[in-house]
Length: 326
Image (cartoon, rainbow, N blue to C red; front, side):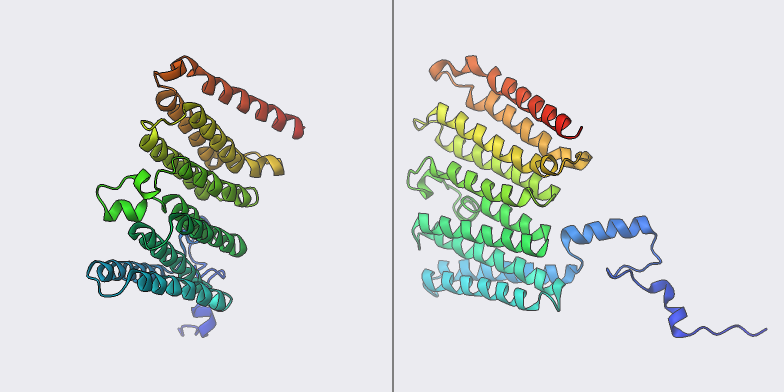
């Protein structure tokens, strides 16, 4: 009996992909899971690892050159910024032909810009207000690219880098790092910085239902508030202003995590609820157990107010959602 021959197309039928690079021979449910992971982290890990290696290598090279006085601080910072901008431009040029590589290059460019500006800030090479303003600009560029390219990883990189920027580099290079020294006594600057970043988060979150982006924004924003309050609570900080800033932060994040579903009259799924729960939980914990737990001004007698207000807010939103969905 002769074995029927199959042409090359038939032999490769089981290995054809659905357009995402995933073979059709893999069950549908598994392909959907792989697609989800690729959308979140990117499909070419070798490219990502290569860009991370370049970023780490350049960062260590910059730090070594500064410590050994091989080159001036200004020249190294300028070189890092030019490299970051070059990565961004190259990523834009290659986006339509090689999207995976372009995606990695864009992320590496944003990381290089953060590293260069943080090095300049921690070393005093540039004015603090100028450096932080540029850091905000880099964060906005990253989130803008993410919005344009529909890329959640770029958005995550932008918001995480923006929230960590004032603390990360100086905290690593200086074990005795203190926030108030870095910002020359500008005790209200850091919380305003965090609130400005969250305004950008709202601009994206109202149009994109990126759950991890929202969750990182919530946790990172409250971490920024905690660092700010913990550093300045013993320096004549107004507790009234602190609770006001915390409440504004809550409402900004509340709009970020729930605005997408409210505007489109959609019911949130289980994963969508997670940032909402964290937002409410962190607000109650920080306000009740920390900010209002002060002996001055009898603020300890007002610790139930944030919890009560939180309940009223969620009840009103639930009622409005019920009415609009009828």
